[in-house]
Image 1 (cartoon, rainbow, N blue to C red):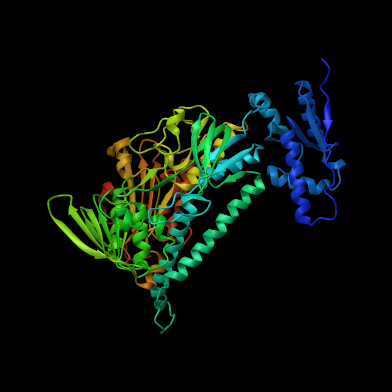
Image 2 (image 1 turned 180 degrees about the vertical axis):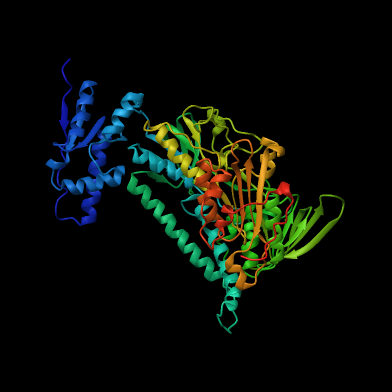
Length: 613
């Protein structure tokens, strides 16, 4: 059999009358045209032996291919630089198969060996897009970006339905706009206020009255968020991803309707779809909730200081918001139906609540609201809240300026046409069941992020899952997202970081007699001079006695718990044991070193209070 001909691609000069930016963009466009217009596109150098091996492989397979020899074109170095931006690969050969970036010589031979190359060579879509991602949050953008890096034609549909109070936001999803980012920044604002109190003990003298300006904080935070929104749009454009600010709804198995804010409709088709629509705050379903209450969707862009605030719900969102609002000097009450931080270690949850109470947050336990009534309009106005005891007929009423609902979140899956194409959801909570590769019951429809049933609702989880899903969908990897031992932190005034199992869950899985819990209270050095309490911060690890005391649960209540927990999470991925912690030399004086000196077990009953650093 004769070899199929290889064709040498040409890349004409974009001309000299343009600006450097225009030249670069034109070069990027021409490179993408080569990638998208050829079944196999090899960027090579004529003298490279690895490139020769790749050409010989395709010849042996009887596959026609196109070559651009970078050492034989004008400004080959510049071409390779732009190619690096497109593919994240600096070397040659740089190979694309049916618009998917496969990689270099080793990767193409590996793909040939495991069958992925043959799959790629057969893939030839008849649809508008290779992939449409519904949802422009962290997970959706991660998936879209990775798919585009692999040379696929990708669209992102993102549309924010305004909250009942009229709040909406830009590209980037909950985390960037109304979640992790503004929350952490307001948390920092509150910590700075507390640091001002400590400063006098450290010799700082100031006489003027210090007060907080809500409007100035809000403006600075919203400006930062705006820059992130713009950055995401630029990133999508540079990656060649089509971004459409419209609401996506399935109308056929491979067709979606996109409706913009003016009600104009467009229709698009794709070979594969990824649902990454996330969640929105839940409402109570009582008189006045949607009319007068706000949620985390509204709080971070509120144009006025919320004043005396009632937070309904003791989820991590509720306690974080209560914490920073109190830290900014506001009168805050948390109304709790049952327990704090459901799903978290309950010993740690109660310690979080105790610290909040010590620092001015009031708790109204075993009550649920039954009505919210507006007494006065204003910014803020006045609201009367009537609540009923969960343990009897008692009712109470109180006046607040703002009522913040934090009672949970609902998946945004019920209005996107899933029933029209047969995608199953959990009717109770809207969550989507998937298999171990994030595939729904409809084979070409996948889901990632907070809409997944039984998976952690965390931004980094969605980002990782989205990236790995794109790699699997387009044939360059078989790696699955690992949902075990995922760390997280509750950014209350005293942060709570954890990784692995709660004590309750560990007992359920391993039985109490098979576990050893090491714990201690500790006193951060920074707190000593400031005169803060020496028995508030707390650390514990939960170990499986019959697996070399492997650490199955890590818990920390203390300053910078998020930073500390991140490091130990990596160790837990590697199979951290109590002995490995004991063998680790701590950094002194730090909070993290407490885990290298844990000696007292809960079962011993010994005292863990601290009297020094």
